[in-house]
Length: 330
Ligand code: TRP
Image 1: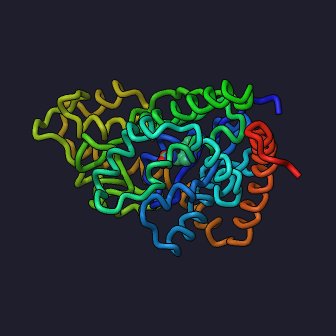
Image 2: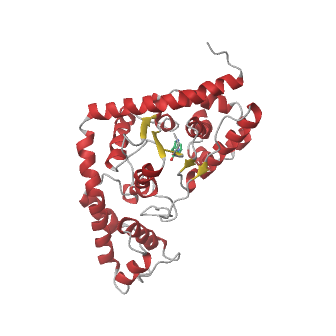
């Protein structure tokens, strides 16, 4: 392997939104030309919040089919399901022995989620960042393309790599964030102060990659804009700004051009065109997805191949780690 290694993961915890697409998956196919790419379907992470088993199983197939519908090519990249490679759990245990409770309890995502589920807080929610560090460090990853919300977790992975290396001798590569051309974070269509999220209770707040045209039109029509009916790109109008960002990301037109085009008009025509652009951009992905999702045998073949490629690499690292910590090898 002489290309640099890129690793990323998506949890199969819900249907994917256009935020997941624009922020991550769209970029995955581009990266595979220049990097050795490893893409995990992070099912082990998903059970940190309650899941219905049959839905989790179904979504694992869905995420795989969506990855491929977005041109992630299993011949070029390694696509695998995290639970198929038990080394993730083995390394996670070893790393937890050098993780400090203090640092884990300062993770903002943990604090947020802890607030929401106060009565029965599970331990996996607390050690989730250690598992994510294991995902990254197992593959001697150079770059992790993550957004703002996962930056602190990547920072932990770096800390753990450095700590392990200095305690036991050089073992892990210290990963870096892969800075992307900023698509801008995509926010909720109902409340532009929070990220667009598939776990939101209001289904009008997000657009799913698999939403049909009518649904997309309806959701865009109902998206909040601001009472000040003046078409401009400004922090004072976060609802409209978010919609312009979505328009920009799908059309690749510049923000200035978009503003020029709709200046002086009401929001109606802009929203109509925006819905159209999203529908047209998603159509080829949705068509390919429908074809793939019905071919379970093929998806399982891809999973099996991915698992064996990933296991080979993961096993090399875990053997080294076990030797260094003093486990007897037979
Ligand atoms: N925790 C990430 C998320 O929720 C998903 C993930 C799991 C991940 N393992 C990873 C991302 C490793 C990057 C690298 O979005």
